[in-house]
Length: 228
Ligand code: FES
Image 1 (tube, rainbow, N blue to C red):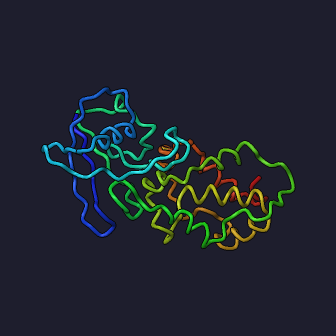
Image 2: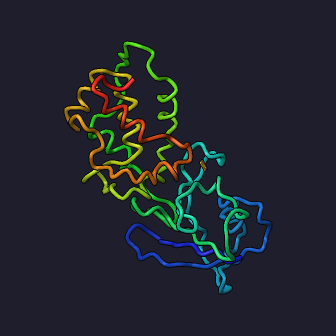
Image 3: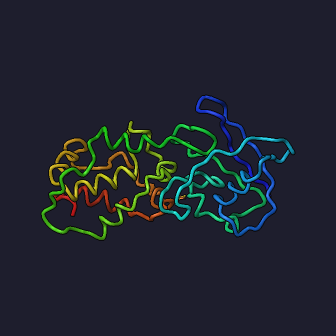
């Protein structure tokens, strides 16, 4: 099997594709495959040349930290949750998420997700929720990994210029549901119709590893009585 990886030495260098040959078992995740390529002292590409280790990041290796988010065969996915046996064809491509600046190879800087929350004051602060509310939905929204896969497929996310994306929308819902003052603040900034910059393609819901129903979060935010 041929593995093509879009590499980039540094944030300011030009990206380039590099190929690797793999003939091991198919019952391996993309995270395992990257580890396999990086394992030996000598890293050899498909032209038989020595090359450098592939830069990427992971932590949990069980789909709960979100750090291994990348684009596999043009589909945004978690590397530790994507298995070779489930991919079609004799060649796979792996590239970094393109909505974030590349640090090195598949490693990207996703701090804009948190910066957008900080600059719009979306944080829970004092929890002053009056009633228990819709715990089930709050629990779902709180599962967001901030992996950035939703932003990769969002046609409206332009790093804050128009719409901050699904991760942001779910945090707005959570904060508004748990803090009445914050809810009023969010309303003041985004008006009565939260998410008007979203064209509802809902690709974000399709690629979300936690299957968070973002549309429901936005709908709840737009209730005249406020989210629960
Ligand atoms: S390493 Fe944590 S989600 Fe993949």
